[in-house]
Length: 368
Image (cartoon, rainbow, N blue to C red):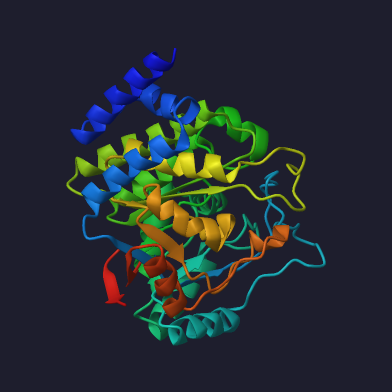
């Protein structure tokens, strides 16, 4: 049995070393059968091929949650509230502008805005907001609105997804984050987020954005009810869509960011969440399997700043964000640090890499 496992691992190693794509079955083998350090070493081989300069990047951004009202009712979320709840809010534009000014003062480049599926907010709200931001802060890249939010706006306005994206792009929306992906398997989605977009619709929103020339990121929130087979299904779907965009001459997914579900005030608090070992293995397998993705991010937000830098040795080449503000994960009681750029650089350097600040599109802003 052991010799069969070793033989299988050798075959995968040969494929990866030859820059040959591994199959879904081989990815599943790595997740279920291979040991962590072996998978990690293989992922590091891939990272070194793609990023031989040993540079690890991070972005200075702010996550502004413009509303907490949401009708989706996802079981994993502790942030959402109902329209008439005492704690319901919609940030006014002046408050958002104030937050962006603080981002600029930090030397930030990226504005991440996500909220809930709020029936009170129509497309004009976003158009006016984005125009106002671009007028006041033309240097800021608006990396905002998940696929779920885009689809919900299209439903409210009875408008095609692509038309919604076109209007928002003209107003100033630069790129889409990968939020709302969770696990791109409807077998899982019906259990944790049945009122949200299905897997195909999430992919269609990102495909439409790519067709308009917009960059997007892909994400995965795991460590809840999914099985390894669902993780591989998710990775396969985004690899296929990246292949599709590459046929047009560009890879419109800039990065892949896997992170783990956090308990605390959710309807999934009874489940056993992912261990650090499993997180690192999923991270490593992602780097190996997603051969058409240049950038893989290690999540210090859900894994702490002790584990985040370790992920850089398991295939990741990006440490994510300084996260000046974060409310969704924090609503579970999980506290997220907001290190200054110099601190992020120091953490990366101590992990054995060369730190650099990037923008939304992975262009280097400055070296440290």
